[in-house]
Amino acid sequence: MQYKTIRFSRTNQAEFISDLKSQVKAYFEANNISTYGNWKMVLKTVFMFTLYFAPYILMLCGVITNVWVILGMWALMGFGKSGIGLSVMHDANHGAYSRNQTVNKYLSYVMNMIGANSYIWKIQHNVLHHTFTNIEGMDEDIDPGKLMRLSPHAPRLKAHRHQHIYGWFLYGMMTFLWLTTKDFKQLVRYKKMGLMKAHKRSFSGVLTEAIVSKVLYYAYALALPLWLIPAPWYVILIGFFIMHFITGLMLGLIFQPAHVMPTSEFPVPDNSGSVENNWAVHQLFTTTNFAPGSKIFSWFVGGLNYQIEHHLFPNICHVHYKKISEIVRAKAQEYGLPYHCQKTFFDAVYEHARMLKQLGRNDQYAA
Image (cartoon, rainbow, N blue to C red; front, top):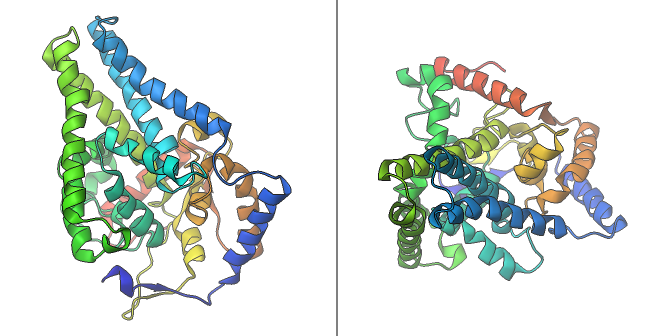
């Protein structure tokens, strides 16, 4: 099914989102604050870049020579890399980091700097995932290929029986796909789907950008350390692997429990491409929050534990999610709509693991 043929209901509780938007707008006006980032975002940006680049510079300059400390520095870079992606690039790609869209544009290119492609990810995430959340064949976040089954409508293979065990390793390998084949496969697919026309980008231009950015990434993130860091080459390769594995695992543990849960719905459009619910209501049925009481955790993951608020208001910076979550929860309850939330991050991971097991062992799953 082509993305242009899918239509959400315009009548099924359509008043929910207009009412909610009015209350959220009133909150910002009453407090005289901007929906964009503030000084806290600037400090966080400095912190995340420092967490990523400080260990890198210390290793290159020979300040750190102990093998185990070097591996520890690579691990810190992994947390820094994931922090940049979750807390800086993500808001910028949604145009929510700054009122100045030029700032958003260049901060979104940070994704190129850490091995992936900003433009391609924007189509996957902003267009497909945010529009068609949990719809099989459209939302690529629930389509990891044959190695895992993240949707009850995907084919179930024998190997999936153990995906709740091996799936965490595959999450850790996620960024290695970005470094190698994923961007190029997606670029070809998005061209065929006609998704590039709306952004006025040429296939050859994006392909060139992807190739150049990956070459530059390998040059500074791997070749330069192999040349300058005073450690055996295999230590550098192990460190590089550790960095990417930590990043991939963190991204998987933040994004997947938000949508692949026992409480999640996976709607199927009818033969005409119509989806039963209004788009905003659809987001409530397919999305889960977690750990709303953990300020430090929420700070580090860019507020993405408030996935419901993020999906309903992707153009609002994440520093505001906690406050507006109170409005969203109350409004959902008023309209008799679900507001799924796990008390802690570990509860969310446990429920996600339970969902992986159900999807791997049953054609249908029981919530």
